[in-house]
Image (cartoon, one colour):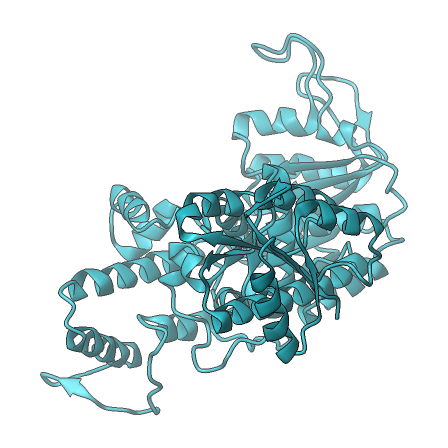
Length: 507
């Protein structure tokens, strides 16, 4: 292991830390001022550089905060612990803003100091392993078996020009798969054009897809090439194809049949050499039965179908994706990347993620901005994670283990309302006033008793908030985020669900 670098002008501080760390079999190297550290960094190799850096703030010959800034420019991933006197606590804020791992107030308790340094060492070693894995597989979207099946399918389709249908919940990464199919195809040098058919009004979608001639309608002052023409020689990705208006489905079928189409207001046929990849979160077979989707178009699109798993079906990928998104968010915001503790990762890996990978990305962006320290602990996670019961409260989270998917109804029953819900054997008959209690009601009773016994006076508010949060999140997951439909299924008004989402911080 690489040494721990200690920087302090006080010889007694250096001596005490050296001896304490030596007893823990942790090698050290000591310096008296920042200039010595910077000079040593210039000549250090990767093998003898610092594992972590422990530095005082006030020293002759330089400030520990200035040293922190310069070290982070050279070694952005190096954990730095800043030692500060109690009178320097304002400086601790500056230390965190500069990317410090933690600060250690003087005079410090030696066992606590050693424990903090050991935690920083473990975090540093985890980061090194994670960086190696990410460098070895920069294009991997996930390592779960379900995702490996997707990667294998992309590999098999790499030289094919066949039409592909990607299915999966909203936010699961369907466009990323479409881009991968394009990137590894013979059309990789051609354009990749993506369009969300559900996001464009019906009266504009036809022009968006096929273009229009000058004067075709009011405001059409010039000829416009549509998405099909723009994608000529490449790939056109039609997202949320299940929401395409029925009359436009006929025009799309014609293009898929022979590659010919007409611009809006045009009289000359246009031909485009385009590979179409479609995606939907809907059950197209059901929409065909309902008469809202053409059966012949369904069969034309459904040549090869790829199902993208929801994030809750590949929980072991949460570890890698979280680190990736934290790095990405920090880069976008121009700040030091946050680290995340194992306990926080375990809590995240047991979250249902109704918004899938997109929701995890948003959570990481929120943590980058809102988490108070450089290391994210469970208490720092956003309210929607903390208020939710784990997917599997009886089995400890393991990043290497594959989650056993459960029916949504069963999972919902297990989640309400507490992470500590007891299991009940089948056929359990326990009642109040002659009524049989369901498993989740028994859990609610146990949680209420525990809170009442603790002497709290806000039990009603606490449990009502948790109950409403889980109920609304489950309804939104069931309707793929459509609030009006979720409100209808819950039997509440549109304004009510909007107000509750704001009150419960579920945005």
